[in-house]
Image 1 (cartoon, rainbow, N blue to C red):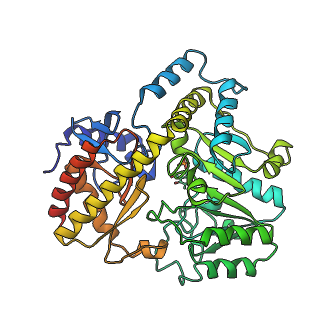
Image 2 (image 1 turned 180 degrees about the horizontal axis):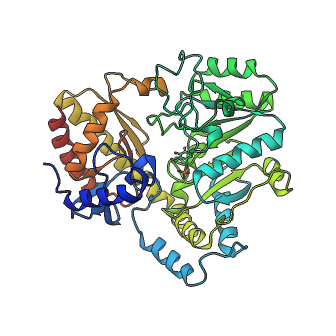
Image 3 (image 1 turned 120 degrees about the horizontal axis):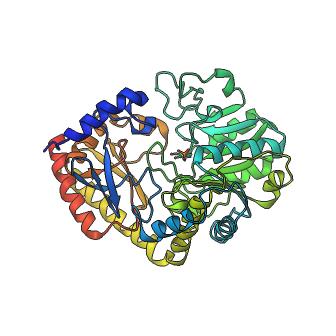
Length: 434
Ligand SMILES: Cc1ncc(COP(=O)(O)O)c(C=O)c1O
């Protein structure tokens, strides 16, 4: 049944008079009226029309302990009374960095920013400054924030993207200049031969290889066994730094992120989202030898709000929980996520809807496709994405909020009862779609 959206519709109309396009981030554009949230708690959110949703968007990933957990609310409100921002040093930033160093394999030295795009930008500058080389090798379908130097070939239209084994760099936005791609090298991901060839074509020029170690912006794809190990080895052999953008995977797939789960340590890791449970904190965390280029002042890194006291108080509280309750939180999140994945796959098969469900449980992707596997951007891009957008709308009507492209995030607040309720709702939505 379609939801009552009377108040949301009115707010959207009002918003469009003063906010360009009615939304503050393009990721929140929907075909119809977006959700106007009244409040959120645990695994749920409620809109201004009183509709409740089991939330698998979680603020695009950050709310790993669910919405507004007491531990975060208390830490943040206590800090608010001690000063909101100092642009000066304080204890919480040291404690967050110490905690990160104990949790994350590559984190020997750390710097903080506010959002993932900034920290990814800092990582790329650091790699260039540290190595003295210009080129960055990125992969088609991977997202590293919305800044010009890396917003190329994230979701390129296939008719502009060139051949799969030699993709061409396509800007992601009007206003970007093609010459900003001059120092990028693009390769298909999860294809070792293509990677080896790209490195050979630019021998001695590549400062860093940057990737999402588990691809979450074009599906939810764990690379082939041995791919990351081979990339790591080639980077070592060629004097190239390896950057893992763990803005989504960090503190989500494991306490030490994808690098812990997959057993490959990059030279630099980029973190954000889950590390502060919903507060705006991102981090650049790397090997001491590399981070020394920032420590010495050779490479500049700055920001008025870096290590913001309120946000760091939140990060300190959230990381303490994630670290100290790791034995409960991560296996349970994975188990519930896998229950949901298996349940969704079973419903799709019962209803005869071609659907693939992929992921680790902590996060997963549903694809409308006959394919048995999705391994890279090109395969993701040939799944039925317009029908997925329709399914997203039907799920909202049944009280389920997934990321519109078909991605689902779990939190420690989701319960088995939430999973059961979600599966019932999913069956109704999918039957209507069919
Ligand atoms: C892998 C990855 N890197 C970087 C970013 C950019 O982070 P932010 O939106 O906080 O700037 C995102 C955002 O979704 C992301 O998924």
